Length: 477
Image (cartoon, rainbow, N blue to C red; front, side):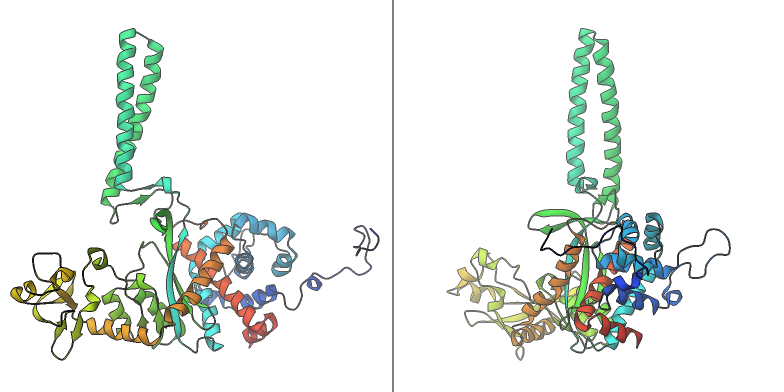
């Protein structure tokens, strides 16, 4: 062992015992957690058992339990059993909890029973960031990401999947009935008993599947998850499907702090822009914010609602017309003339306004040429493959979308900003979670779990920006 750094003798006694505080450096993030939680008014935030009961075993103070969870999520430890072990062996946790060691059930129950309080703590930290002038630019990027639920794909049922299982069980029943008839003709009593038992089991399974089929058909989205009823089967990547939750978030473009988030079980991001934008407005206490999102959020009415709420939306439009596959002119090649209220086609002909219709609650105006002019056009084969004329549809508020498109053209870096801003937090949180899923069930409890993830992420970002000592100073101020 010569010429190596040597440790201390394990059996060596010390005259003056070392303090637990000596093991925690001044820049340790655990000191930030301690100060932040101690500065909170937990009763006002909605936590349970702030006032202890007069009888029975004394309970743990909510601040101690909250410190355990904030530390756990900041250090990639979300399980209540693992948190229990950390309180018994981790020096930082011993310092934070003053050597209290609650059992895993007490730790788990705190998260289960204090969802409202935890959500308010997450909002309080955003308020702190706002008071520290972290959101001066008022530009946020919005995106959604699928997080795996507790529910396995085998325990999620759709009409098609149930029909497959029912047909398979019915086929097995027919096969066993045929075998039972053969056993009758050969008078094999032992085989008959075994086959009858199997038939009884299959008929019970079939009855269960029939009951599930009725429930699935009654469900609004025609699917049921048996382990976690609120989770839904979603497309996560390519053709890969997973029972998940769709987590929406709004992230500040300057410091990459998550200013607002929401856990949903909607498979699509459409019609989410305005709602998440309003959450960001409430967090920033500012209406005139710029919200950037990808083409998955493009929905005319939702974009107009976002603009009406005082925001500036920037969402690119995806081409879903299929004109390129058909080999005809794309709609974008027909230019609108506002002064004449006509569309100019690629052949330089004017498509006049003809009539107005209502589809899916939207007022749509129709533009097209007269039949003879369209038939005699020399580029007709590139315009339409049908027998009739090429029609262009215009929404009554299309000018809102055109103005947004012009802003996008003037800001070519908008989509790059979106990608650099909103995808990083999701990647970080999923990395902290590891190759696992949410540990809780139900939309409300999963929301609480996500609140803790977001609080831990934002806390780490602020420690990176200010440093532990600097952030403690700002919190105490």
